[in-house]
Image (cartoon, rainbow, N blue to C red; front, side, top):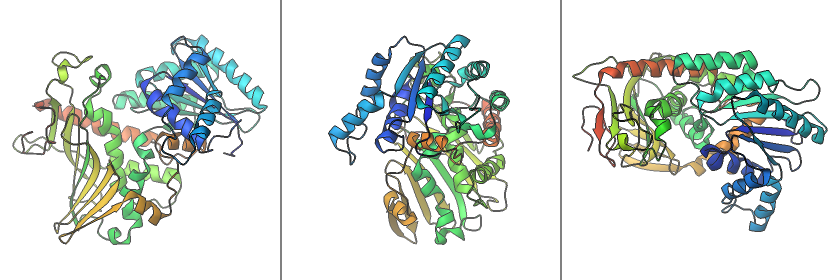
Length: 460
């Protein structure tokens, strides 16, 4: 995308928690760092509440108030740019299931293109629960919002938040609907973990670090653990979380993507589709544990007091913790265990991959907090910060990250960090199998602040 190509971004669900905490701050950060052209972009906020442009603009101003505070930008420059950023935002009130709102939106888009005197790139971001996807996509199709420009450079793309569906059947239904309306090149399925640059830089070191290339296989590695542990509980998200649970909230996406990056073969080309295909191959080759009551390799737990959280059903069996051992049916990883664990209300907050070698050495790749790699080799411990690794790789420190990168890459048509149809369907197949397995297992209750549960141990 040329820097001066006009861009129109439509956010469905623009008054939601995600828009407040992530989306608008990320868009303002892009604008602040000159990734959005001063006079060549527009943002349309689509939501149900009856706001005026001014009222909604005041909300966005508050949401973006901390952006740029600790940066190289002068306070007055940030303040001035925020005012200009807000002038590019229009609020569009409408209900997701009413076609009229989409027809009115189409007219607004035409007015914006007329002002640009050129057909703009359109980016439709469904920052919504997947329960709304079918209604929104069908109405977009009926109103003609999915169509790219007949004349001019404008391309239409759609962004969808995870989870894509709640199981393999619903995911396939959404993917089928998407394929009927858009080409795969227009579809950008978000897993924001794949937009965290520390994740890529650290978990693909086995491609770039000569000392790791020759030992990254079953001959040297005993097992690999992937953790996504949080001290926080569900924080008022009971009505959402109780229908999802830890496995579908972070296991189906974040943790399986981490596993894929750790275990994937190096793509033959730098093309985004090559990366996505190698990730898909890993997930599709996962072999899950068989139930063994004497030696369980699958655990699900729930923190004490969860069922009293607002929005949670009485007697809920929804897990807030899980741990599962799996193997990957490929020559490189023959016999190597991959232990994937996640949980809330624990004694630690950390996202990491820990590689255990057969000789007793280990390497810890910590994604957050404070990204770093710690080598425990031959009785000696050495640590490299992510910033040092960035410098070694020649990466810019101020490159777009997180949701900034989501928008940046989507606008440029770069799909490497987005999830393919094949990856989605392979991951749901895995998760559905796990959910069937653990219906025969008891739900372990643990006090808040417990240590993560390990196989054969009690939570403390």
